[in-house]
Length: 282
Image (cartoon, rainbow, N blue to C red; front, side, top):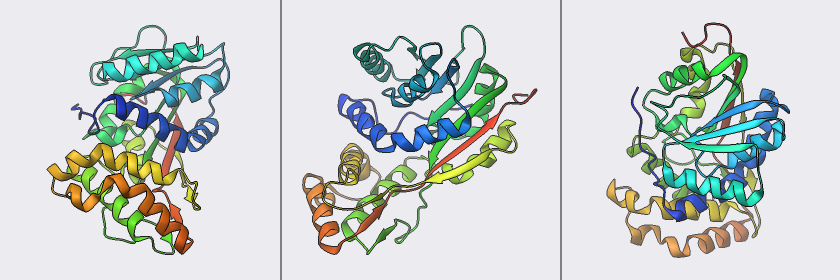
């Protein structure tokens, strides 16, 4: 099983961006966790936890009698997540720095395995999931959430009426991630990934945000992601800094969207969940 480095890095700016992104998509992820069956008292493993936002959502749902273990390859992310947990006074969350290809869980198997925007970074996500299933007890929950963003020209990016600035920015992001080897269609493949890992019959649902008006958080989300990716965007030949004009991107998107009365739609966040049966990890 091979792993990919997280393409966006682990700078302080990126970790702070992940926190903002976690808030932007938080309701969708919480809905997935509730649909999957997370409940008070459960012990949960959150893989690819990053800055810790999914771990914190899970901790709220399992309560003080439950426990959440967040795992991420980057020590910078783990340190940041631990600091946030301490500042919030959370006693039921702990974080471990480890590569998922070599991670070993101490103690009893968990009641639930969860992750958001993590499988898309692996060349063989089914192999990753199959290995992680060894840490889940029979009957335990497995739930993941991934983007589904086709790499095709507009109108693959949805908005109404057409917002040139938003479509161009979102398309550049998808093209850059794709050229870096990230599977931006991972969400569409989740059910098949589950089946290949030994989890047949997964339930799936797609969730999107429809945003409009001057105060939407979508402008900042696109700008922050563009800013993080800009050096790579130039490196892989998607766009130059002069073409992107990142310092004015938020205002240009907002102005066009407000003037035209646009509704801007995020890429689908696809959630899949299933229960581990005896022998699922075989």
